[in-house]
Image (tube, rainbow, N blue to C red; front, side, top):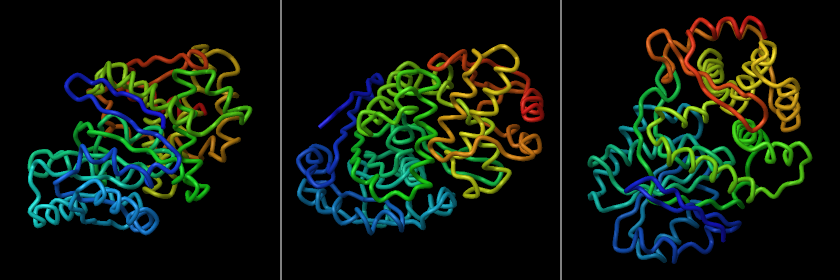
Length: 348
C-alpha cells in the first residue's frame, strides 16, 4: 500500500492508495469510525458498485453506518442537495463526533465535503474518490463547493478531510469520458510542475497508481504552502479560468470538467507562446497530450464565453489571476485585466 502525508499545520492527514483497497480497509477505518455513526454519501451511479463494500468495511471497523445517494451528474452540486443531506443527517441523530464519508467522484466529493463543513458546524470527513479526476485532484486539498447559475464552485468552504482512501480498482468501471476527464488534470500537473510526468504520458509508459501518487504529492506540497488559495495554489488553476467559462456558457455537463480545462489549457498556452511568453513547442506538446487522451483542444466562439469569468473566484476588481507556462513543468501566475481573456479568446 502506498501512503502520502498532507502536512497542513494542525490539519495533517494521510492519503492511502492501493488497488482493491476497499476490500481490506476495515482496520484502517477503525481509528476513525469505531463506536461512531457514519453516513456514506454517494450517487446513483457509484453506490450500486461500491456502497455495500464500503458499508461492510465500516461495520467491520465498529461503525454504525447508513447511506444517502444523490442523483448522479454535475447538477447534483446544488443547494437543494446540500439541504437534503444536512437535514437527513440531522434526523439520524448525528453528533459532532460522528463521520461523513464521500464515496464518488468530484461532484460527490465537493458536495459532501461542503455538507461536512457546515452540518453541526463541522464533522469528521473522509474522502473515498472513485474517479480519476477526484483521485488525482479534487479529493485532496479541502476545497468544497456547490454550483449556482452564475458559475461553477462559487459557493463553498475550505475544509480538510481526516483521510483520503484511493482504490484504483474503481477506475476499471469508469466510462471513457470520465477517464479522459481525469487525464486533463494529470496533464495539468505535468504542465505546471513535472515535465517527466508529461513525457511518460506522451509515451504511455506509466503505471496509474504511480501517476496518482505523483499528482497527489504535487498537490499536497502546494496546498501545504497555501491552503487558502492566496498564492502558489493558484497554479492548480491552469486552464481553469477559461475552462469554467466554457462549462458555464455551454451548460454544465455539455463538456466534462476535464474537457473544458483541456480547451482552457490549449487556448492560454497557444496565446502565451504566440506572445513569446512560453517556450516554442509547449503548446504543441499540450495539444498532443490532449489529443492522445481524447480531450478537445479548441471550441468555436470562445470569445463569447469569457463573460462568465466576471464571476470567477480568482477575480479581484477588474483583475484576474491567470496561470502561464514558461515551459513544460515550469509555471507561474499573474494578475491581468479581465479584458485580456477576451483578447486571448479572440486570438485563438
